[in-house]
Length: 234
Image (cartoon, rainbow, N blue to C red):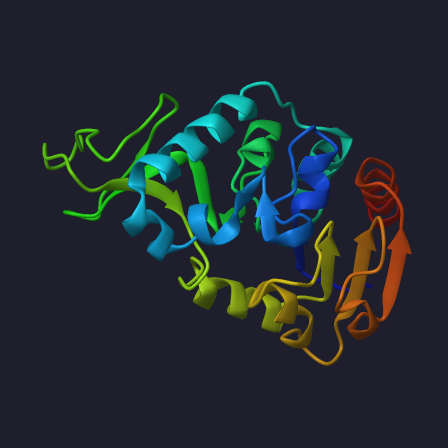
């Protein structure tokens, strides 16, 4: 008799997994990010007011990212993706490239990517590891004057929402990892899974939407994620 097919898995990751690689979390007390007001560096209005400040801020984040390395939690998710017989989709709220460097292949950066810039004139997106400014020349159209970080700011629509919604509706397991439950629409993903799906929160402390999960485990991502993967594959 053939064993039942394994369900697909969707894993939402937040700042908690990157924090264990030494990267600061997005939102701190008082609405600050690395001592800047979120309104100044993470909104379209802030960019319109002072593009030089916003570019300088993301140039600093880009430089910090070079010093960070994927951790045991990132590695465990790669192991799960490669060994699980059904789809494993990682949806990250993080703009760093730690999942990419660890080797995750089926990955959605719903809030954009720090190592990319977007041209406001032609819409082209390009990888960029060097500093950027509004005067950076777009490789696609050859013009300058409207380059911005490829980051989804507050007030903007996250990326690939249709694909995420479809994956949530058909998954058998949804895991939220290192998320605060403060930022929507990601905080509402747990309510989009099908009625028979297992829901699990892994976090240092309970999130704002923790009560909506059937299960929760508290502790560091570098401990909880390898343990979960071992459990699933064992």
